[in-house]
Image 1 (tube, chains in turn cyan, orange):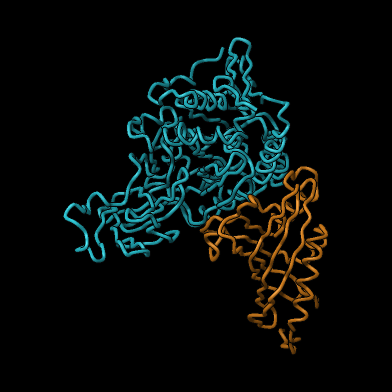
Image 2: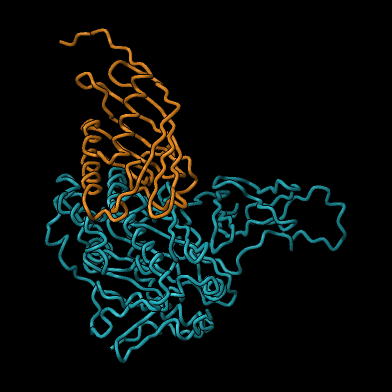
Length: 435
Length: 166
């Protein structure tokens, strides 16, 4: 079967109000190969959070965009992304998940690198010619590494615009998350490392999908009612909207039906917490004014930073990133993000609230995994060529259960896949009104 | 007045029998009967794979349930909208290497190794790890006050979920 021409993978019928995505984008290994080059190697990609390596010498290892990488804080205090391969013959110089060190020593021949990646030790160095240059044999780094409010991103595209410009309208939503602490946010210990037998873009869609909650997550909504949340609030249509944020970033922004540790009380938290959460809210009002404080504490947001970082600031905050291993298999890492200065009690409340919904043992995420794996299975029916993502396309103000935010992702994805250099995709490409 | 009565010395055979019965109830989806094995102050926990020694108040877990949460979990699993388990998976639990670590009359610490197979939709997922139990006697019968399933897996891959009671 010949591949579908790239221009037909996404059909953006703005006049008719129809938006279709060809299902080969979820199944064809050639598409995945092209995505590696045109999406994952072109964009800013989230690598980790500075709080994961708080002290000089702290490091962790993880795969980022398919690369085994070391995230290390050097003895100079700077956070770096180092490509975890010895510049001598290739072995991984760091084989621990995390820790603190002065050096990374390759166990194969003993070459040693410092925490900035510089080559500082070569056994029997006198055997090399004068042309042998330690400096050029430092551990390699991605061409670009930048940090926005402790979120560390790398890019394999040396000419990409600075991170803060790339974030475009997503910056405002990231600020709503980061402003929840005066001293900074931190990743909590414990990684939910899981997977899905489904294409990575299905998880992008699902993470910013306000339409599926009432069916896929019926049991969670009933759990809310069981634990004292007003049934109208749990089951009713939520006030909120989807929004394209430029560069393929998107959000659904809405009034939370659930309690939020910062700082929206619900009955399950217990009467004793009510005044305390209100005090946190009032502190936000004093710091930021009523409107920004209201958005921080009373609204929730499911944020996509293109292409594969999800920050869902809902009943707790999850930072979730994922990489394709195959067209029908992804590896997912999810963490809890929390204010560094919250009380031990509120931290416990936050983590408990997190687990009601989120993660592979929660009351919602397993059903998302199930839904996406079911989609992937369904795609074997190649006779059905397209998925429909048209919902709300002709509506003047997109609602929370419309699909505008997904179309924002797909438009950016499609532009990049057709070979548009990132710099030539206008920031407001996906922000253009659909009506 | 508290009297000290001679404590019935628990045997490993008795603990094994209890754990095998529990596994049989879970494999048979007799979850309401399983609930009756738990004390009101029970904790059921599955730590994240990179924080096996963690505390659920300070580390992100996969599951950290009190009794109310477990009861809700069971009701959901027996209902029709826990899609990850509807239709239900088949499971088979192998419980082995049972050890009584300590016993102070009222409560005893028990560990056991487990392999839990979950069969569903043409996949077999294997959960490997060990349990830490605190068992207590209530009206002459053993009950579970703490049940922690600690996975040896480095990640929940390719499982993707812990949708059953592990």
